[in-house]
Image (cartoon, rainbow, N blue to C red; front, side):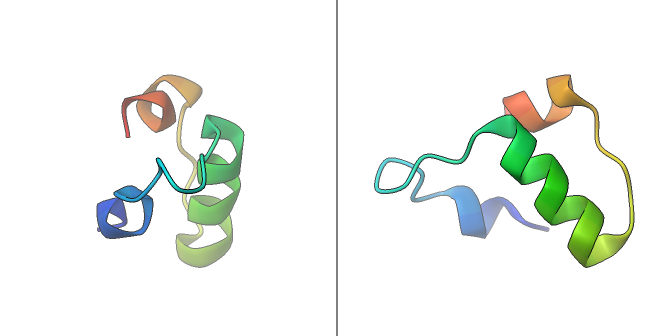
Length: 39
């Protein structure tokens, strides 16, 4: 669903908290820190 956005994380690192905020903003769902860390 959103993996394609974070596949180039070596160019710009995405901390888990940023991933959580993006998911909440775009899809309206909550994501645990552990799941965001796995991305």
